[in-house]
Image (cartoon, rainbow, N blue to C red; front, side, top):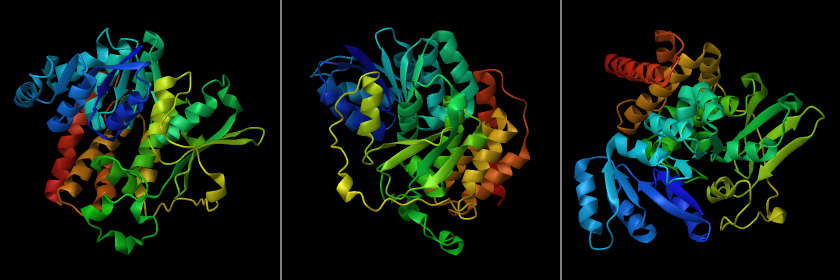
Amino acid sequence: MRAISILGSTGSIGCNTLNVVRLHPDKFNIFALSSYTNTDLLCTQAIEFRPSVIVTKDAISAKKIHGLIKNTYTPEILHGLSGYRFIARANEATDIVAAISGSAGLLPTMDAIIHGKKILLANKEAMVMAGSLMIDSCSKFNAKLIPVDSEHNAIFQIIHSNSDNNAINKIILTASGGPFRDFTIDQLSDVTVDEALNHPNWVMGKKITIDSATMMNKGLEVIEAAYLFDIPIEKIDVLIHPQSIIHSFVEFLDGSLISQLGYPDMKIPISYALGFPDRIKSGIEGIKLEEANDLTFDSPDNDLFPCLNLAYQAFSMGMASTIILNAANEVAVDAFLKKIIPFTEIPTLINSALQSWAPNKPSNIEDVLAIDSEMRIKTMSLIAKR
């Protein structure tokens, strides 16, 4: 039986992971659950799944959780970064679901890699910040990274047994286009936070939903794919596919184009990652192909969504620039959510950040975190000066 630690169990990925686990009580048990702010849901999850360890953000929330569940059972309750890192590397855990959003998930994910875990990777920001270090460490410590993002999971399903990347002509990531794919540039200048959070296909956290609206999410996925699959970024394209039924393509040298299809529900890629190398039930039915008769594709509008090109640009500039890209984006998205800056200023800030600093290539995680921290300060300063 596999023992699972979920880093971010109250978010979309974490909740869907538990939905799949419920279907397979004979295959999985939950070793650890963790959250940052949603202590009420974390308690509900803990009472149902009885993990050995619970982790929350601070001593106050840990005390609250203890009070809520002490009459039910008595797990170990940890808090803060040390707690998240503990459940990522604990000997008892075989599988780690890396679903903490943003750069906060980097250190726990690296801990899981160093301890040779099977990692269900839903934190693309960690790969964007430290992709080459993570991939090298996976080889060194015999860790297994299985992507959970629907697009990367689709590519993984197609090529995981392919031993020759030279047979791959290109990878095509599909993108829904978000809520503003049919807008004009003038219309984008007036969009509200609520409009940007209204994704037409997927239910996700706030940060990733805004990234989808700017198409930075797809830019980050391009970088992640380059690292995960050891593919030159020039061989990675993006197509707008509003229906979110086809989750990426792989084109081979012989002209074959292979794709993976599924309804836009994260339980499908999660179940594949949990069960790998076997397939297990996800709880989702297959596509009724006779009803899927309006699948469309289009090239992204780079003038409308400059964040996508910024991601390609950052990758070509080197690993330090992808750290800058990610840090500036996280700060800019947070500022938009707080209504400090307009939607259209997100890519402007990121571009300014990329042009403002060219640090040396990081050689370890400490260097990565130092660049990340410095860039956040610089981006907040750019916002203050606007």
